[in-house]
Image 1 (tube, helix red, strand yellow):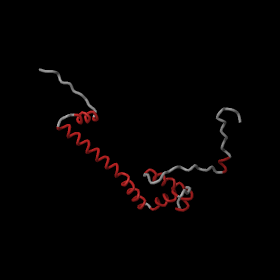
Image 2 (cartoon, helix red, strand yellow):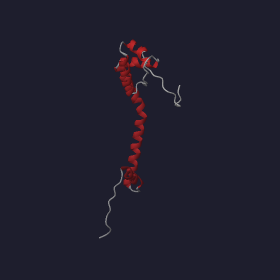
Image 3 (cartoon, one colour):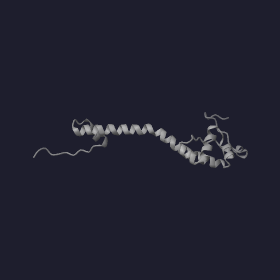
Image 4 (tube, one colour):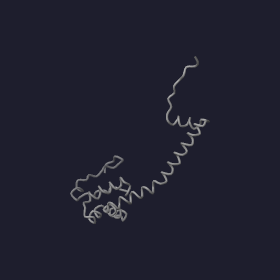
Length: 134
């Protein structure tokens, strides 16, 4: 009758490794396949920056206001200044910059909102960190 068979459960990575170390025509075929897939992945990775730049350029050409906002941000203008130049609200500028940042067109850092004079009176001083009385 022979020895009873035993089933093994392998992860995909382990199955790949076993196929690549096998000294047979199927093992050589598996090695060639994985080498070819790695070369394809590396080639795509090298092309990615150029593709991303072309996509960003196409977006900026399709949305002239975004190109304007990008230029103003590079010049270091405040959101309120950008809003005035584009004839839109500062909130719209913030929303569009956030959207552009999600597409990697700009680096968006929220600007701190300034307190209005009536809000400054409500601000309470923080106690010292060491717990002593001021």
